[in-house]
Image: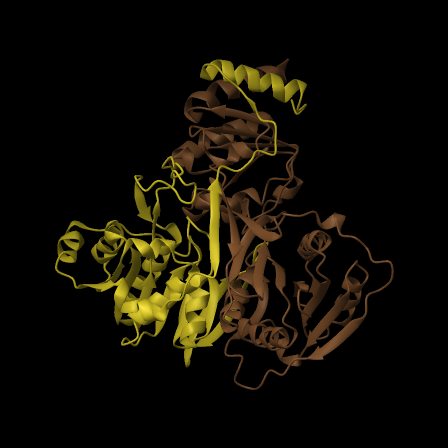
Length: 256
Length: 330
């Protein structure tokens, strides 16, 4: 099976984020990492390849720094990478991101495309589903298991409140992958070495520009959310905090 | 139907998903501020009784978009039927709950119509005649106001708990119901879904717990779970976790709180090293008292905490266990 994995670089989970001066985006001088659900999508693609053979290709859109995500994926076992490299890709809405991906892979023939179920920055949870629609492919979301079946695949969708559902679907297809579908591997030293010689195709914004349109939605402002609760901050040493909190639990929360 | 607000309520296997009332509450509020008429739609097969239930609310009209091909739910079927319906009616604004089902078909639907969806909103603003939709970004660390810059139809989904479903206004009289037959030709629906099922009987029902001690990534290592367990034991509560902890196998899946786990509202929710991503918050924000211990002062969990301790949980929890034991012994 030939599988494409769409990946994204996002700010590190515990990185302190600051707003830029215009309050429209974050300051970019933070540490970045791979979007967590995308790491699971990559792992699942590698496992499928190990089972059924084929090829794993990874793709991302973003500035030069986002190449790191592709390098890590190649080190873990992806065969080649596609980098839509331009800072402008960060500001695209989900439909334009999907259009850019579709344009960049128009000469390829994939059986499956994986994305993480959502990104840790925007969190729209849309790109994979939109990509399926643009390609005219079926899709399934929030996937926890993938198996080959007669004429296609059988996937396990996670539903809400602990429910699941198996779905049979033909190929090619787009799947959005849930975190926790598998156990992530680490890159090996040999893998890291080999990654340096694996092909990485760069795609400039100009090459996909014709497929894009102006964003149909506008992020007007970004801000620290207003607090809706009166939070009492417990100050002091660890021991003092423990004492104060115990008092609150006994006298105000009344659970002791 | 120009300028109309259409709320698409959610039905699953013939039952109305109660979160739909929240979306309808939002629709009623936006309708009151903009003066735009409000209508509702339910999509599926044999949905007459659900349409009737919705028609009891303050809404101009209810459409029942029907086809046998819409049972069971598939993204192909729902997107096809709704595209047909919306192309004919052209509402200005379509509101839906941000459920797993809606996430599955709404981006496809909007794309098929050449439109976009602002997903997972927690509120809206009506400013100078414009509508802005507020959503959380960067895992809840920031909020963003987002507007539509293209032509309607505009699609919006609201996060679970963003509006009060119990505040939905009843209508003076039952709204008219119009049944619309959706034409879903053979071949449109490509996926074949099987019956839904539960993995295993849940060993613990966290919804019944009065005290929950929940751990997140801040617990760092599997062996440190023991510390949280000791605190839970001292308090007489249950141990629970955010999704990454269960994904890592440090606690079983049935201990997970959040959108893909259990939704709880205990007397006390003590969050240890939980940053407070949206997916976790929706599962516990109804707790009567929330205590958060986290080293990151900017962690979104503090936004909803009643008591906050900014510091190292590994220094705070051991004396806390001792103090709790002392207090209980007294």
